[in-house]
Image (cartoon, rainbow, N blue to C red; front, side, top):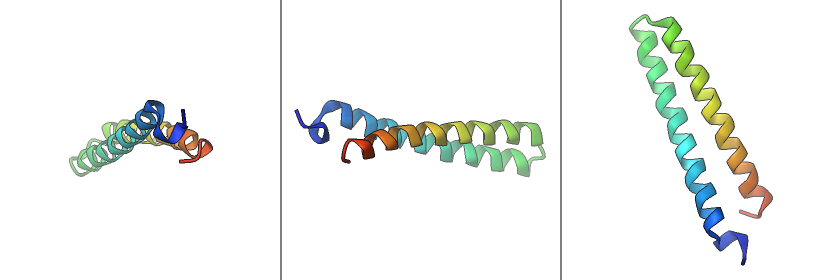
Length: 68
């Protein structure tokens, strides 16, 4: 079976999309916390957003490695 048309490729693409959306959501939450003066909570959301970015990068690397 060709990777491009596999369920694994589909799952990696969905996982990448989910991690990317989560990153944006946490970044937004951080901006709200900052506006409300909750700097520690802002930092937690920013750290979490960074983690989601790294997860998304791992999924994307696998997609690229396999020709997508």
